[in-house]
Image (cartoon, rainbow, N blue to C red; front, side, top):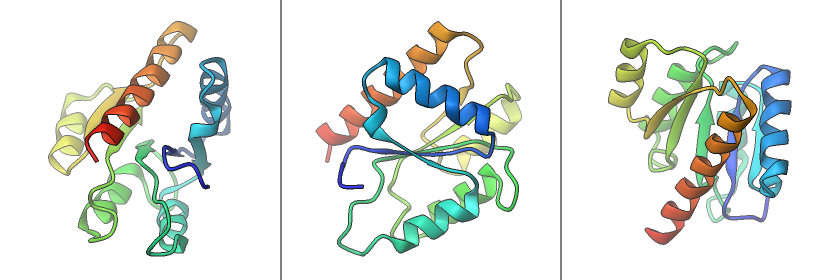
Amino acid sequence: MSNRNHIMFVDDDEEDRFIMLEYFRESGNESHIHFITNGQEALDYLESIPEDGNLPRLIVLDLNMPILNGTQTLFQLKRSRRFKDIPVIIFSTSENENEKRKCLSMGADDYLVKPASYNEGLKVVEKFTRFLEDVERNS
């Protein structure tokens, strides 16, 4: 991925990935997103990027995934010298406040509940896009 402004979206649910891609297409930002299906695959992908390569500017993690779930993946990312500064947003169906507090205390930059409607989905994409713009402005 040559685009420096990209989002690595980690979610094992094929339907959720398809829906997110549609939201990004609708907003004209489909080139910003790269899909990965689980936490271990995400870590392997990141490790495969050369030291001088472009890391994702934002990682979006689902919580409930096989192999490495979102919390385990977040833990691995934040303990890595190389990946700890990549912003991470947890994106889950869970509205559990304890889970949210736990993720934020582990270093997640935000915790968003997956949208229940089309308009909410477009707003989430706008939020991701604004987040990327803020990251770029501050780097």
